[in-house]
Length: 267
Image (cartoon, rainbow, N blue to C red; front, side, top):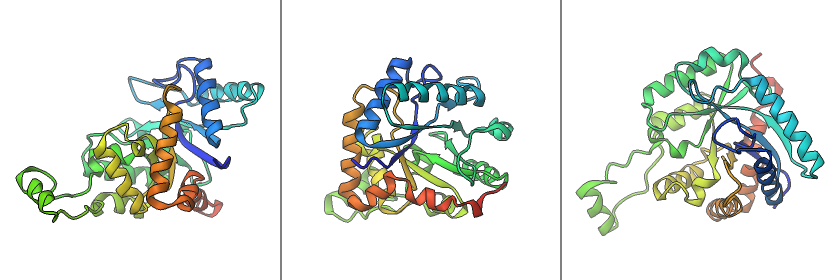
């Protein structure tokens, strides 16, 4: 694999959330990611009020410590301190200290899996208004981003599939594309393409991939167990769908990186 790949979403830091439990596990995960081809990994532990309340300074310090240990272990992966911010009513209060990256102040945002579309649109627009560029994590896993499929269920849907008249669904214009036009970015999970969240999520991920929704990719890795197989299956599914060249651009985050030139920084 190309050693220029970037993982924009990874729970690599030890004992901060439901990711790596200790330093040994972090090193195992980092070695697997490096061997697969990742040169840069964004360390993005959860930040959820009342659950994982990770202070930005602690995240940054833990990232520095792990970076030193990777250097000592000969694992040439560059770590970037970050956070997976949960989109709720508490997030606006955390913006002044939020761990962002790039001139555009990009912040990884986890949307509630069952959140309403209107509420999500309002809250994300508030982040943009306040000078942040939301990078929405794994939209394919969120019900609010499900494409409109009038004939996808029930008796009519079954008949349509049997007689071959069911058409490929389109992305929900009122949410996915409008958010993209408003300035939101989107990160796809490799595990989604590998099918670890089920067929529905995989199909949605492939649809979003074909529609050009994604700006970058992430492992969203929490453990070393089965990680090599998941990475390989995810890569193969993406390359099979859009070709090796486009897959390489996504794994390198070229769309995201090119969109974050200093001229679009928001102070």
